[in-house]
Image 1: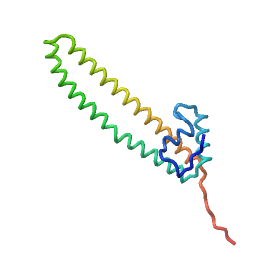
Image 2 (image 1 turned 120 degrees about the vertical axis):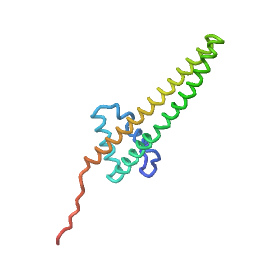
Image 3 (image 1 turned 90 degrees about the horizontal axis):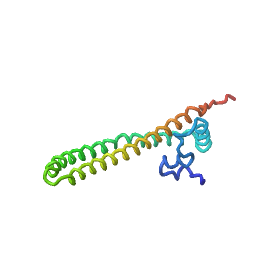
Image 4 (image 1 turned 60 degrees about the vertical axis):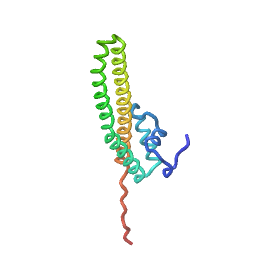
Length: 150
C-alpha cells in the first residue's frame, strides 16, 4: 500500500479506510493496531485535523438525512394518489392495476431499505473512526516545555 502524504489527503474516510478497512467490525486488538499506525504516521495536530474532518462528515450526514425523509413523504403522497386512482382502475380493469400498485409499493420499500441501510452503515463507520481518533489523541502524551534556568 502506498502511504499517502498528509497534504495529499482529499477524503478523510477513504484515507482512514486505506490504513485499515472495516475497522468498526474488527476486534479491539485490530483497533489498537489501527491507533498505533495513526500515531506512528501523524502528530497531534494532524490527528486533530483528521478528527475534525470526520466530525464534519458526521454532521453533514445527519443534516442531509431529512432529504431521505422528504423524498419518501413526497413518494407517499404520490402513492396515496395513485392508490386512489388505482382502486378505481381495479374496479374497472381487474387485477393488472392492483399488481402495478403493489409493485410500486415494494419498489419504494426496497429503495427506502437500501438508502437507510447504506446511510446507517456509513454513519456507524464514521462514528467508529471518530472514536478511534479521539482515543489516539487521548493516548498521546502532553508535551510540556520548560525553560531551563542557567
